[in-house]
Image (cartoon, rainbow, N blue to C red; front, side, top):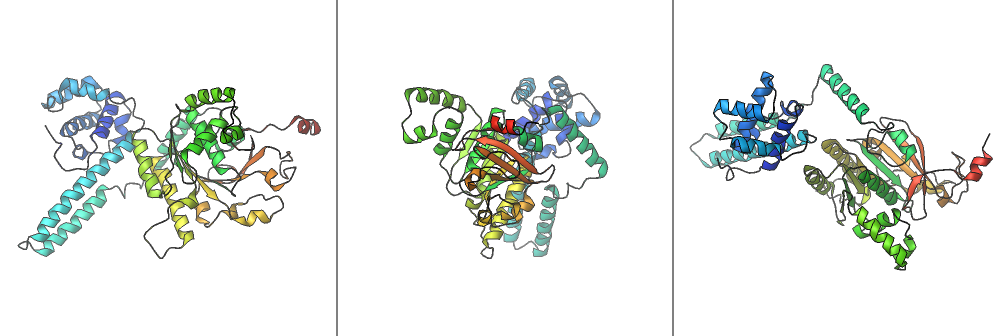
Length: 459
């Protein structure tokens, strides 16, 4: 049956992914059985198949391609659902059910939009028809809004303790299963930082703050490359630097090519050959860069959602908060309120897409009045709300820039020493994670104290 000329919006490919996942994995349907109904699917044959799937799930029947074909045949709907070949073809269009809950959210949203369009068109027709009592039309308008609000799931987040405890235990079992040396999130590539954070966690907002020139971007690019090398797709929104300059940093960070030679166009033939080989390897990493000069949090959300619908967004980096387009249309908001709103949207984005969002931010000048310029949490620029919304705040510190020779907290010599001060961590410890870097902050590695330091402090 042709449904292509009916009311949009629609997402037939996402519907196929949901049904395909339910056909190949037994655990898929229970995740969405309470969230979708057959009529929420746009394509008629998808409605028929999902109706059969739900009936089989409720009856406790094992679900696979053969049993679903039998159920549809029993209902006399097999040919309307695409026939045996159509069912088999659906199962081959998806590899796993990894994103089925997010896909269900998309289908649900499209259904709501269609219902809204149909309902509002009906109200418009009734409003134009003067033979219909206006009171009845107003009642219909209220009923439509109530129904749409009820369908939107605004009230579906209330859960009892039994449900919460079951969810907590399921999450714990998942963390245990995927833990590698205590890292359950996206690895940072720095032993100290991974030990303190267990990796960057899904759904969390991570704020990395520093004064200009300390190396926020270089540190973020290290996190991006390390995440991508571990198999996570990364979306980078660079409001300050052109994409090609980010590529320069990734390339010199992953090679032995001198950053000065690369920037000045004086690379040797040997360096150029190495650069080509390294570039070929970096080209395969799942990183997407958006270097638009004017980017709002709404643009980031829309772009990231599109990437995630293609399984290409497992982590988001925004460089940096104070450069985001703060235009909200509300003239009564000051700069601090706009920054707070942008930070809040970044946190909501992390929760919505269930990925880590790394948000770079400026610090104010207060740290420059201190002898060693060590940053503090209170120095987050323009808004204390950044601290409030962040699950983790890292303050980057390079003591050598303050012309001190010894870090006062660790006692380490400051040459090539970097410190990620975890000033806030909602679900973990605070403290210092030490790393080593080259002058350009393109190569970041674990910090190993120099031999003379180790000898001096040996017992």
